[in-house]
Structures are given as C-alpha cells and as structure tokens.
Length: 182
Length: 101
Image 1 (cartoon, chains in turn blue, orange):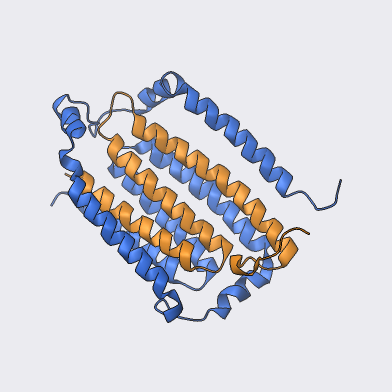
Image 2: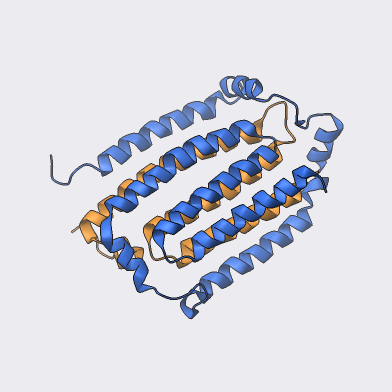
C-alpha cells in the first residue's frame, strides 16, 4: 500500500465522516464548523486527483468566502434559529427521519450499482487517454495550461460566468436592502 | 494507484449525505449546507475525470466554474434567508406558508 493510497483513504474517511457528523448533529454551530473540515478534506482529495489549482481555489472561495457568508447569516438570524433546532431533540435515528434515511440509502445503493456497472476505469476514452499519454502525471505543471485554456478554448463559458456573477451580486444587494426604503 | 472508482464512491457517499440533509433538516441554513455538499460531490467527479485530459483541462476548468457558481448561489440564498427571517422570525422552511399579501 503506497503512501498516496493511505492518504487517499485518510482524506476520504475524514470527508465522509465529518459530512455525516454535520448531517447528524442537532447543533447548528457545530454543523457549520464541521463543514469546514469536510471542505478541507475535499481540497486534499483534489490534490490527490492532481488538481492542485482547483484545491487552492476550493480553500480560498469555499472556506474563505462561502463559510464566512453562512456564519454571517447564522449570526444575523438570531436566537430563534437555535430554538428551531432545539425543538427537534430526536437523535440521528428517529422515526420522523426514517423516510429521509431510506431515500438517501436507496439512492446510495443505486449510485453504487451504476458506478460498478459503468466501470469507469475501462471507459474507452479513459483508455485512449492513457494510451496517448494524455493523463496528468504527478510532476506536470498544469497551471499555465489552465490559464491558456481559460482564455482561449473556454472563453465563452468564462464570460457567461462573469455576467452571471454580476447578476447574482446585483440580485443579492437588491434582496438584502431594507424593506420600504424607496 | 488510486482508481476512478474510489473517487466516484466517495462522491456518491457525499451526494447521499447532502440529499439526506436537504430532505430531513428543518433549518434553511442546514439545507444550504446539504446543497453545498451535493455541489462538492459533483466537483469531485469533475476533478477525478479531468485527470485524464491534460490537453484541454476540461474537468478542472469546469470544476472552477462550478465553485464560482456555488459562491454566487450561496450569496443570493443567504440574502433570501435573511429576508425570510426578517419577515417571519423563523427560518424553518415548513413554517413559511404565506405569500406577500
């Protein structure tokens, strides 16, 4: 068992276990902070998939941006949000949550079945890419290639994303303005 | 060597946990966290498959786009949650049952 594999299992276990804890805890603050750990473990998984730039972006945008936003919303919405959580005192496995657990488990079984039927390691394009040396190797530097591709081949989706970001910004500012101020 | 199947299985587990959070939680912020988990499962798949495309980097670039989209949607969703809290004094989606007028 190589070191990479050990690290992969470690990161995967941390990601899944912390996500399970975030889903099962009744404490909203803990749920948010454990979600931090999930995102960091996922960034580690991206590094193991040889996508270091995506991993850094994940840490910067998710951990630095989105989680701070979520914490803001949690702190601005006050004490009642905590009361909502305290009301449902039930443990992880209560009868009211049985349909949700059943749905998630059945979905998981279906997806696992599909994964093993699809057999992703033997897909034709994956084999082609391995045969043509088109697979990213651990010592390759991909960042300049990503930059060039972003500005040439994927320029249209890039522009579309930028327009959408502007729309989201204006929309969020419009939604959060005080009621009846006009 | 880590195979593609390992990544796909972890991503399936994350997807199902996110689905469970969306269906069972009675708090809009935790539902948002569930949505983020599902988005992250999708990004993990993109990155894992993108390993086999060193020429165009399609997987990694669309993973970047997905991260940016997640940031935009979260900002709008949190603005909506704050507005809902101001109007109803609760963020339980089951209790929000009135239209504007």
